[in-house]
Image (cartoon, rainbow, N blue to C red; front, side, top):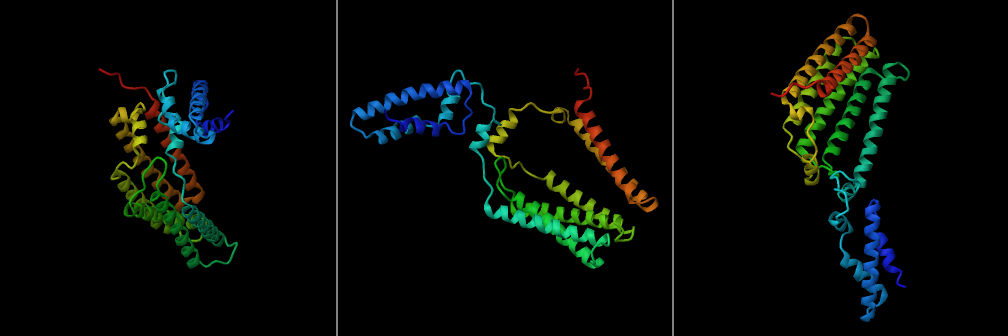
Length: 295
C-alpha cells in the first residue's frame, strides 16, 4: 500500500480545525486519493510520484471545506482565516523592541530611584533619564506602527513618526508629573507636565482623526459582516460620549492640580482613578443603556 498519500493528506489538513464535517470530508478525500494513486500507478508512474501528483490535483483543502454542503459558514475571524493571513514579526524588529524596552525600564527606574533619594542621581540627570525613557517610548510606538501586521498594513514613516513624537511628549509630561509626585521637582512643574500631556492628547487625536483605513481587505470584509455597535448605529450617542469624556478629563485634571497644590499628590492620584471610573461608567451607560424609541 502506498503510505505517502496518507502522510501528504495529513500535511494538507494541517492547521485546519477537524470538526465532524471536516473529518468526514477528509475521509472522503482519502478514498478518492487512494483510488487516484492506484490509477496513476497502474499507468506506470512511480508510487511516490503518483502520491504527489494526486495531492497536487486536490488543491487547497480549505476551498473544498468552503464548498462542502454540510460545512457551516466560516467566520471571517476564524482560526483558519487568521492563520492564512498571519504575518510573523521580523527578527530585527523583535530585537529592537527588546532593546527599547530595556532602555525604558532602566531609564525610568533610575530616575525614580534618584527622585526618592535611594541612589545618587542629580536632578539634571533624572530629567535626562526621563528624556531617554520617553524617547524609548516614542521609538516603540513609531517602530510598531510602521510594521505590517496580520490585520493591518504598515503606517507610512511620516505618520508613524507623528505618533512617536506624540508618545514622546506625553511620556515626558507624565515623567515630570511623576518627579513632582515623588518630590524631585517643585509643585509648579505640574503645569509643564500637564501641558505636555495635553499636547500629546491633541496631537494623537489629530493623527487618529485624519488616519485613513489601514486594515487589510479580509479584515474590512469581516468588519462589514459584523453587526454595528451602539455608537455606529447612533452617531448622536457617540458625539455625546465624546463631549462627556472631554468634560470629565478637564474637570479631573483641574481637580488633580488643586489637590496636588493643597493636600498632596496622593489625593491627585485618587482623583485620577475616580475620573477614570466615572468615564467607564458613562461608557457603559452610553453603550448598554435604554435606547430611544424609534418612530
